[in-house]
Length: 337
Image (cartoon, rainbow, N blue to C red):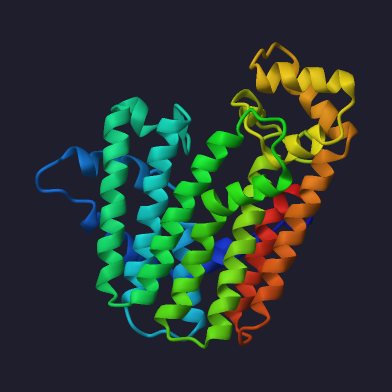
């Protein structure tokens, strides 16, 4: 008699392991988030906020705050407030971004600005920033307030810089890194750093956590930008080219433009600077990027940042949690390996 095939249970990835390990803390964060979304006088605030907060996001940034605090043996409850703070800042930036980008979809659902209006999205985003600052203050740590308020300023600065760099073929890789350090890595770095600070960890450990979050955030954004052009193979079976259509100077485009010949320059000028885009242009853009090795070079830069994140963790005491965070860096870039 033939043996019955047994189903193989897939091994949980680092993100799932992190979720499992921090489930009680994350439940407390979600409870606090829902409590602070409430507004006695403006019912639209919880409506708009809940639409995005409850949309199934991974909550990676607050998980990083919880993980950093636990990694540094924290046994209080201020890390719950800080994780909620980080999520509120992130949600506020998403609400504002969707207005700036005129987006119609976020996490597979219509955006708040589409369901309500731009005014509601902007004002509710402002409300969430205010709630975030209230939560920071409740920790009683001026250093925490300094780190997170600086991060909020850097995020806004990065978004404005991205506006000025968009559609400009002279945008350099250095400028691109400033943009993504602002719009993405700043909050990753602050999320991990405040976890160490609230735990009273030694400065060397706090610095290591900041370096980890910064490198992880940069890798995360580079991978996102690479996947917008289909990854290295351009065969991932997903809708690609949104950054191209929005004429964003992301890293694959910057690296390709830096190596153009005269005919390719004409193509980029027409499609990016002038916005004259036609059928087949996305495919041609990917072909040019592939020919110049821009997609492969972008992947290499993401892998290098993931390696930086893993190296930063070696300054912290060995533990299962440190191992998960190290694996998480690999996980972030796994889609383009």
